[in-house]
Image (cartoon, rainbow, N blue to C red; front, side, top):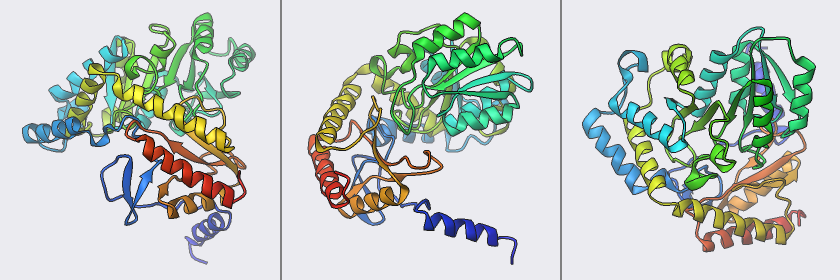
Length: 392
């Protein structure tokens, strides 16, 4: 028995239960179509909501920035890693989101790991939706505050949890995803905001899947519900609708100032690379100049969901472009995904631990880059495989 045998046994168990993740290799730019494992397939996997990951304005902006600044930042933000482009991006993001200030991080995951431990600590309380993203869960663990989970998207459950623990601490934080990445449903943010104001608790929303999707021209969930000034912290990512990489915390100036002093990924990890920052600035330009891509995304979403429902598929509780095709058991989901791939459609199976046991699915990510013909091809493949595997 060697010291790594237990790992081999765990991997064997994952394979036997249909939960082992097969990582495919992409060898083309992101878009409606990809070259995956050597073959051209329709892309239903990427978070590239607006098709900007290979937008010519973004790629040209990145190339131009490399010519002026080079590639790597070579330092953390607090030493020698803050360029004028970083400050411009933070100013533009704050204006785009309609907040006092913004601060950028290396990723949305890092933004959550930085923010939560900087705002609460041992002896404090975090009220967290039970389906919040892993980065929120990990940020809460790092903070050493006590986490109180409330039922998914249940404002009354949140209120009951607060009443049960009220008075135990001086500092409390309510945190929720805005759009839940596996189910595609939207948090009841107006009700949660009212509760946060009533108890005078900090309110934080992770808008990773709302930016570029919800609100006027993709300004996000706070704009979608017209809650400007009523949400203290918006966490976002620049790797989905923006098509690049990076994270952002937007909200009150005092919180941005505090994170520059106590946000550990800001203090101890190198800055966003210059070409990424330049590409993000170009993405803001595109979004501010036209709502065309956002409108096309929603047209494609409505069409695909309507047709999938007509075919007899269960798309869960989604009200966003995230479209889960609920299948139940992981082996079925993996078999379904493989058959789709054989038919030229790249749509990965999602199983435990990403989603609960018994709720495996194919998650389809709709994009503005898809044409109607692309969607029809995907629908035909789902119809064929669904009938073949007894799902419809």
